[in-house]
Structure formats: structure tokens, C-alpha cells
Image 1 (cartoon, one colour):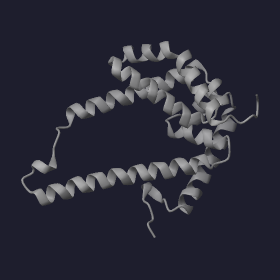
Image 2: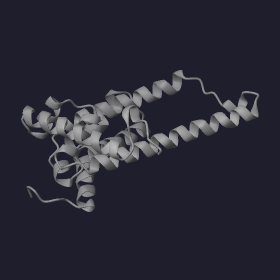
Image 3: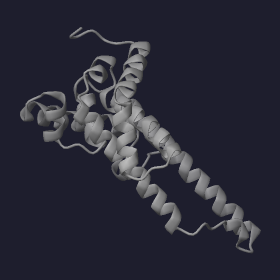
Image 4: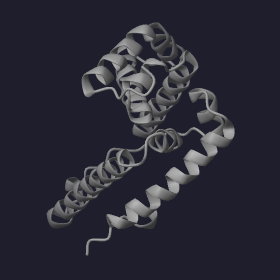
Length: 192
């Protein structure tokens, strides 16, 4: 199996097998963090997405250790809890109720436009990461998911030097490629 590239179906099957194999672990993480049944289902989906983004091939996904799945689940669960708390703490403000329909419409449009721009930027970055050389893309995805080079090395069975080298070279490649497609510092998109 070593260097064989998995197709989309094999990657999907590997993800399904992984989530099935570690379903009990995912539910346990959800229960320990106080997630509802619906949130636990969302947690499984979030873990599936994060692992797909970070490991990107059926072979790597199939070989993911339990510790990696556990850390990914913990990270996803904590993010879900943070989002829940943020929704509770932030008062819901509908700018259309501000008394000025012109300003309200402008605010809604600006909010939607900002969200759309963020989605487009995220898609552009994801495409660029996919174009990186293969194991650099994995190191960069894991780094962006919150893992440092030591954790990446431990999870993927690499030496720290290999993980650090692949990560730094991958990030350098990413900067160059993002600049080439018009994405500059702080996510600013060059529209020219």
C-alpha cells in the first residue's frame, strides 16, 4: 500500500471506517464535554472534516492512531463549546430593528459580503494548500489545525527534524503561492 495514491472513494471509505472504529471514543469525548446528542453528531462530522483536511489521503486516514483522533475530537469539541458560549454571551442584534431601514439594509449587506469574502478566501487557501508537494501539504494542514511540529512528528511517525523541515518549507511554499494568486498578509486579497 505504501506509496499508492488513494482515490476519492477510498478516502471516503477510510474516513467512514475511522469514524465507525472510533465512534465510541467520539461519543465519550462529547459526553465528557457536555455536548447534547445533536452536538455529538456534529462533533463526529467535524472530526471527519478535520481529519480529511489534515491527512487528505485514504492511506494516512486509515493509519491514523487513536491519539490523533482523540486530540482532533477534543479540539473540535472545545471549539463547539466556545461557539455555543459566544452565541449565548453575544446579544442577538438585528440591524433591521435599528429604526433606520437604509442603514439596516447596508449593515446586513456588508455582513453578508464579509462572510462571502471569508468563504472565498478560505476556499482559495484550501486549493493552494492542495497544490503543495505531498507530505508538505499534510504538515501545513496539521499546523493550521493547531498542531506544532513536535505533535505532527509524533502523530505521523516522523522525526522532529523531518516534521519541522516539511512544515517550514510547506509554509514558505504556501506564502509564495498565496502571493501569486493575490492573497497577501493578514488575508488581504489583491483585487487587481
